[in-house]
Amino acid sequence: MKALLVAECRQGRLVADSAELQGFARALGAGASMVLVGNPGELPRFDGRLYFADAREYGEYNPDVHKRLVLQAVEAERPDYVVFLHSSYGWDLAPRVAVAMRSAQVSEVGGIVAGGFVTGCCNGKMRRTVRPLTPCAVLTLQPGAFPAEPSGGEPEILRLEAVKDASVELLRYEPPSVGGIDLSRAEVVVSAGRGVGRREHVELVRALADALGGEVGASRPVVDAGWLEHERQVGTTGQAVSPALYVACGISGAIQHVAGMKGAGFVVAVNTDRDAPIGEVADLLVVADLVRFLPALVAKLQA
Image (tube, rainbow, N blue to C red; front, side, top):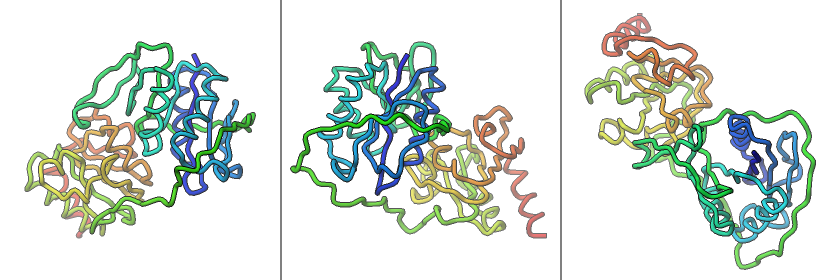
C-alpha cells in the first residue's frame, strides 16, 4: 500500500501540521512519498521521495498549476491514496485532483477502520465509516486526528515542473477574525463542555477561570446551545489555543475540539466518565461531578 502525502507551505514556512500526514501513513501501514510546492529552505524531515517545486516560481497557491504538479507525482508513484490536510489548501485542491483522477474523495478523515475511514457528517455532530470504491482515493485529514510524526532523515528530492499560469495570482493571506475575544493569547483557558449539564453551571466554569486568572472557553455543543458566545469556541470551527494550562470541564474529547487545544502545555480534564476520550490527551484526569468539584477547587484556590 502506498500513500502520496501533500505537504503545505504558507508564507514561506512549512505548515507544522504537515507532519500529521506522516502519522497517518504510519497508522495506515503504508509506504509514503511526499509532494510539496514550497520554500527550498523549509523542507520536511522525511525518509523517502519528495517531489518538490519551488513556490517562488509557481506561487504558494495557484489551483491549476498545483493540481498539475501533484498529478505528476501521482503518475510517478501510482499511490493507493493521495492525502491532503483538511485545510483551505486541501479543501480547494483535493477535489480538483480527485476529479482529474476520476477517483473517490473522502474529506475530514478522523480515523482508520478495517476497509475504510471514519469521518464526520451532519455538521460534525455524527461520525460515519466510508469505504472508497475506486482503485485510488483522495483524502483530507482532520487536524489533530493523527500524531505529528516526522521522520528524522533527509528526503530524496525529485524536481517537478509545470507550465505557469499568470491568470491567477496569490495576493496575501487573510487571518481569520477572532472577534472581541482572543483566546490564543491566554495563558490559562478553562472550557465548558456539554457535560456541564445546564446553562447555569457555566458560571462554575467561569468562577474557576477567574480564580486561575484565565479565560473561559467552550466546546461546540455549548456554543450551539447558546450558553456561551461563538467567539469562545475552541476547536476546528473555533479558535486554536496554546495556553500553559487548559482545563476541560465536562468535555468528552471529540477530535474537533482536541485539534483546537493540542498546543496546550498541561491539560486537566474533569469528567464523570473515566473512559472519556479526553483522558487520552489529559495530563491529569479528575473523575468527579464538576458541580461538586469545581466549587471546592475554587474555594481552595481562593484560600
